[in-house]
Length: 506
Image (cartoon, rainbow, N blue to C red):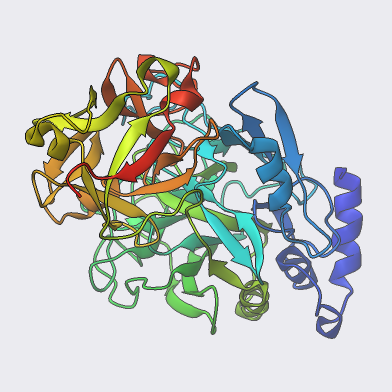
């Protein structure tokens, strides 16, 4: 849609009464309230009632071809089209299109001033296209699951707030997917991917802070806060704001808005109820009034490309002008009516909690090998029914409910009970469960139909672009054509597919 068409639509909607907005999308509602969207991003649904363009683009691992995913007549993304395009291979989300007509699309984030991870010298990772399945009123769609080092950005923007201009923004997040990393943000940031000083950002942050003395809310978190650059704020300053609650909702609506010397944090359950205001008041001291916003748009990262955070994004917008609470209440009602709900994270041959299983390699070179371990290193070994008892137990695993997400599974070692397969620095290890959040997430895997058509492939829950893979007889979590030697495209589908059998000692 051209900018001229977008302006015409905004002008028309500004004249529409609230009673005519029963079928409106969030951006129709914002426009009616006099604060139109200048950026509108969602991989799950159309954010205007009349939007029929592409929501996002996926990149296929088998041949690097792409396709756009558009909404069905219901407005929900055509997940079946994605599933068909990606069948038998992997897919990444390569573009999240701006539905506002302003051309503010989100693409792979470039390097920035931060050097937080092993990929800091290059572009951030793209998100898996299947890492965050949900339903909207019963129709399947996919969100954007950001693991650490995953990020999207647009530094060449049109119409977003700059300087001390007023703006609003909301996002729908997964309230259970977060960490202490900096920074899982959506919103306004620097146009050069560098930290250019206090007040140069205004973005929604979700998580528990980055451990460097930034703001907190009540309880242990996570919290909705504002990233205003060189500060994650829960209120007026970095001190704890008891009015900013720990989030417990699976789906959460998060709002940050600002105008000269006034800003607010609001939020609520994205599936039920109204919004609450967690802070509304003057700007913090120390270079935040007036603001010096630059207008770039980020998702999943900080303004300087700090990219160690994790989170899940489903939809979000940025507006021009400071939206009223009444307008935001109508937007919240629209989000609730969209009917977000969880759905299965697994597919393929079913696993049963409590069963003892083996996992046989399907690559033609190595089909007598099974997933096993030597000490703490996961590897593949030739195992038969006549192998000694020690080796048979090393190649047998007890299926357990996922430690980090009960919709997936964890795999306990038969010969060392209490120890589980987990990934660490992309390698698979067998380690004792320390009951930490990080261990639980890294020891959780989501089986799906084997990519080569045999058995199952085991996707990391916390890094869903990566799958169990045997490479030179060692176990890794590997991506299709990633930066490491074990990410090689050759024989990827075979190397990540395993046939599940009964345990040797069962």
